[in-house]
Length: 104
Image (cartoon, rainbow, N blue to C red; front, side):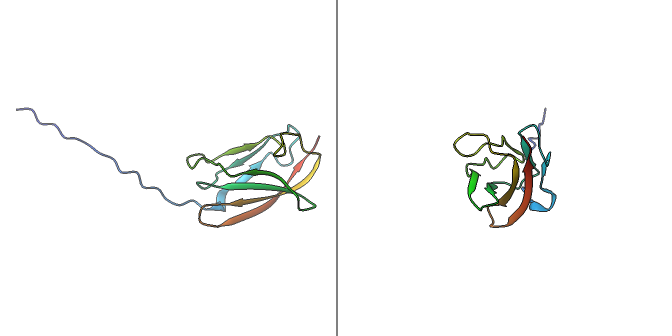
């Protein structure tokens, strides 16, 4: 008599905060900034120093932990050289703020 055992696995999702999140290269000359080690469902907003919203990504896939910003505004135009402020917000309302620079 042959017996078989059916195995199963349980995926336990643990919450990751912004402790290890970073962006690079910073400053960028290539026109790309990568946000790495993001928590699930992170909203990315980037502002110029005048406080104007330059870029926003609200439709972030929960399975991605990295996001590339192509240094373009929401209209698809390249942003000018300068310093920008980014604000990251996760699904739990936690926030991380930082600066990044674009060199053209």
